[in-house]
Length: 322
Image 1 (cartoon, rainbow, N blue to C red):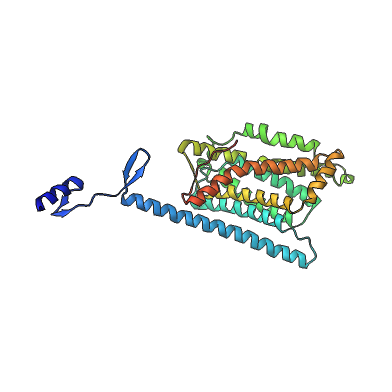
Image 2: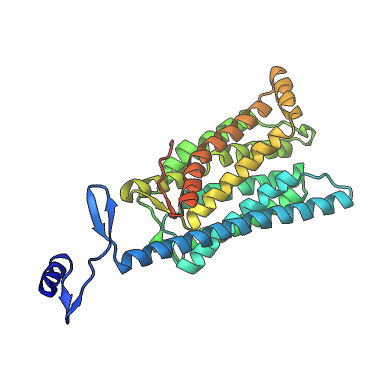
């Protein structure tokens, strides 16, 4: 019996110094089974812990944005300002998204997976909005845009200098395509379709109207180069890892959903758009279309991002609509 037991032990796992060696655990996979080793277990645990940290970071981001927005809205209300907490939350979330990118650059010393063209687009529409906003608004919106522009400029500076060797030029959009398919079309439409307010100020007012419309149109499609970079990476390796770049794009998605919420909670806005449009002024309708386009572009990525958070994998299996 003892000899038979040892023979069976050798057959199933072997024997070391007279002690029966246990057969390693196996798990079912596509096409058969694979051995579950200590390394496999450690990788799974590491991924779970990483996913938990990512969810905690997103929760902290959302909480901070909403909290700061509410505090700012309260201060505005106390001092007689207009309570526009949704728009304030949008801008703060965007600002935090840019800060996530800065953290990535400083910590990882690499801009892998990050589109330089999208950052340039962001800087352009923010600069246009700050200049025109100084005339049209000149309030906290302009200040928040200016702060976001400053951080974006730092990101671009690092991508052009210290981290130039890590820029993903192969997958990013070329400068020619950026100008031809994104910047110039937005500028051309802005020249003809813009708010047309404060025209009594002459050329300055016309220029600010064009800049304001340009910033609106460019913002709607500024993220396209970034999504294309992520799509190329996802196609080549099967997924896009949920790190800082993905968190940044998801933050942009949150700003879009907040923008949609602002339209929904102000249904009178739709009536205004309809009234202005039938009177022959297309600016309001084009603004609404720009909002819808930007939301549609980002919704696809946000769907796959949320799925990666739900399954705890940290890997965004991204299939862009672009």
